[in-house]
Image (tube, rainbow, N blue to C red):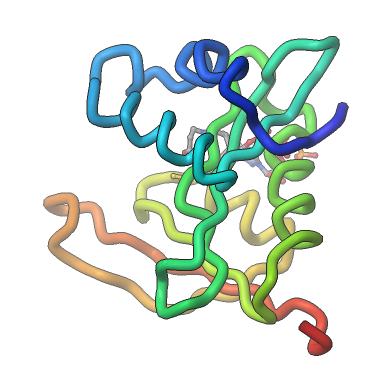
Length: 142
Ligand SMILES: CC(C)(COP(=O)(O)OP(=O)(O)OC[C@H]1O[C@@H](n2cnc3c(N)ncnc32)[C@H](O)[C@@H]1OP(=O)(O)O)[C@@H](O)C(=O)NCCC(=O)NCCS
């Protein structure tokens, strides 16, 4: 498996792994913007996109993983771990944040496995399903 920056030729494959993108033009527009802004990364398995992630710096100027999706058929094979590890390695800030809904057990398990700390909770984004924030301190020399 290899993780690399996404290019325009990956956009259709990214949309294929992101079920939301199939039905939401807004998501497809975001994907095009993330790719053209060099914020999107793909995990390649056998020359195919198995998942993608987005790293931005718009959250209080800190690194923030704003998207992480692995194709359903590729889950529990280390793809999510590989994507997050890659973002940790290239993150320009000494702190890396992300968030997910409280109901998202797979993402909470991945965060625990990768030694992320809980970093707060925001109510009222999705009704009845608070947004949990996670944080990891990266090496101090950034
Ligand atoms: C969350 C997600 C990215 C995880 O990706 P993944 O490639 O399956 O994760 P990995 O294979 O790297 O999992 C690493 C570890 O995380 C934990 N984990 C991941 N998915 C899990 C699940 N469904 N149940 C329990 N633990 C899980 C396990 O400890 C796992 O290690 P193991 O397989 O050796 O037990 C994937 O489930 C996904 O794309 N979900 C839909 C989108 C989403 O919710 N994104 C999250 C942010 S909004």
